[in-house]
Image 1: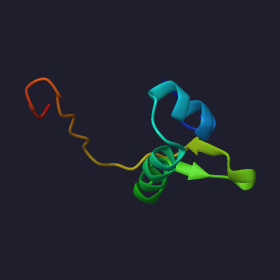
Image 2: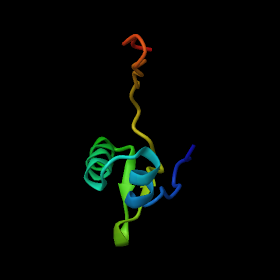
Image 3: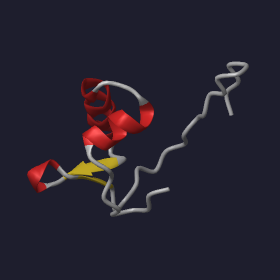
Amino acid sequence: MYGPGSRLPSLREFAEQFDVSHTTVEKALQELVFEGWLERRKHRSVRVARELPNREVAFVSSEAGHLW
C-alpha cells in the first residue's frame, strides 16, 4: 500500500507487474490524477495525493459483480 505523499512505481514497472500496456497504465494514472487521488510531479513522477478526496469509494467484486 502507498500512503499519502508516497511515490509510485514507474509506468514500466506497473505495466510489467500487471501485464498490461504502458498506455493502459498511463490512462489509469491520468484518471486518478483527474479525480484527485494522485499528483503528477516534475519529471513525470506520480505520488499519492497528500490530501485525498473526501468521497466514498465503491469496490466491485469481480467474482459476483457485487458492490461493496
